[in-house]
Image 1 (tube, one colour):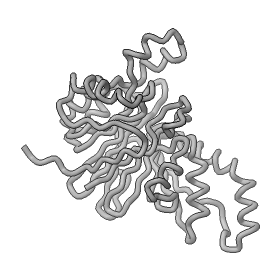
Image 2 (cartoon, rainbow, N blue to C red):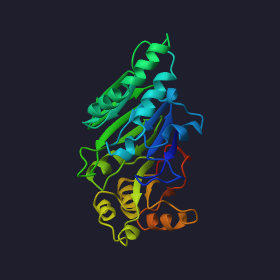
Image 3 (cartoon, helix red, strand yellow):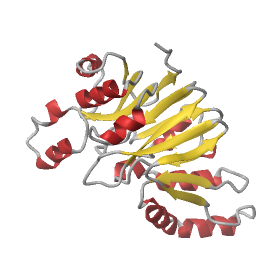
Image 4 (cartoon, rainbow, N blue to C red):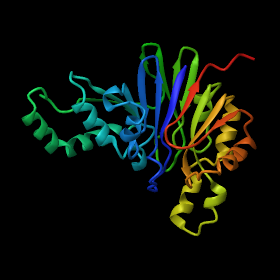
Length: 280
C-alpha cells in the first residue's frame, strides 16, 4: 500500500485555508515529498511528519508556488537531524542553480548556527539530481520513475511515478494533456493531477488569469488523461479557483464526464490509501 496525503491543495493565490502545492507519498518506510509550496512543513507537522522524516524531495518544476518553502525544508531538515543526513533532491534541469541560490541566501544563518552549536560543523548537505526520464530512486523496494510533462512555456517539467509492493502512484504536477503523462500514468493505481476550472476562469476579464488557461489541465482534461491511461483513482489538487465547501460534487461531476473510476478531492491533509488495482 502507498499512502498519499495532499499537504497543500492551493495555488499561487494566497488562501488562508490551503497551503501551496505539495504532496506526501509514504511507502515502505520512505517519506517522499513532491513539491514544497508555502506552509508545507506546517501541514506535514499536522500529520506527525517532520522535516527530518523526509527521505527525498521531488520537484515537478520550478514555478515559485511549487518551491516557495524550499529554504524551509532544507534548513529545518538540517537543524532537526543529528547525524550527517544529505537531502536528495530530484528535479528538472535548473534545479541545481535554484538550490545553489537558496543555499547562498542561507549563508548568514548557517554561519550563526555553526558558530553557536558545537555539533553543527557544516552547512546543509543537499544532493541534487537533475532528471528528465527513467528510474531515479530505488530504496527499500520503493522506486521512483520520471517522465516529461507539458507546462510550456515552463520547461522542462516532469512528473513522478512511485511504486511499492505492486501499488503505483503518479504525481503529474502542472501540465496539459500530453504523451509523457499518458506513458508515465499507464495502468497506475492512482494519479494525482493538478486542475483548474476553465469554465469559471474564462468568465473573468483579467488577462493575467486568462493566461493560465493554455498550460493547465481542466478537470475534464485530467479525467480524460486518467481514463486514457487506465488509472484506478484520480486525485485532484491545486484547485483554481479554490474548491469551496459544498461544491465537491460539481467538480466530481465534471470529472465523471470522462472518467468512470474513483475521484478524490478535498481540503489539505486529505489522505488516500492506494492499493494495487485487482486484475480484470
